[in-house]
Image 1 (tube, rainbow, N blue to C red):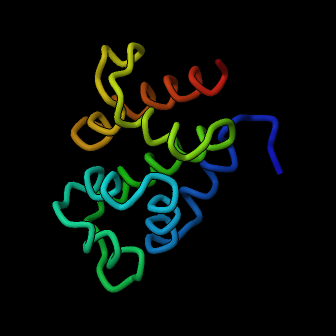
Image 2 (tube, one colour):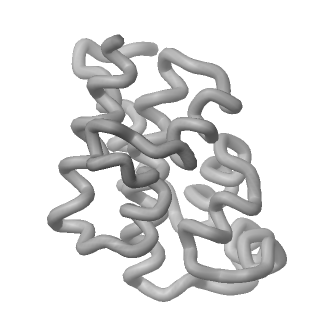
Length: 126
């Protein structure tokens, strides 16, 4: 099931999944609170509604969640969910000591997306 390119399967899933499926998988990997943070909502109820398909996040949030899933999927190939969660929340020296989750939530995705992916690939390779 693993491909020659690390994270390729996660990338494909992040693109092919509908929003409800994407959010459900991301919630399974990262937990509802972290997904709520990434999606800029204060309640996990919104995450549950997104996963159920009864509510849809804004387009910009969907982009951020797709990136987060791509990164989480890459990391889960090598580590347990609790390690992946810690990686998202921890100060990362490859990202000027910023937490990847904060960059994904607040940053310009065209700028921070490649940087977060590169940091995730480096972590997974280590």
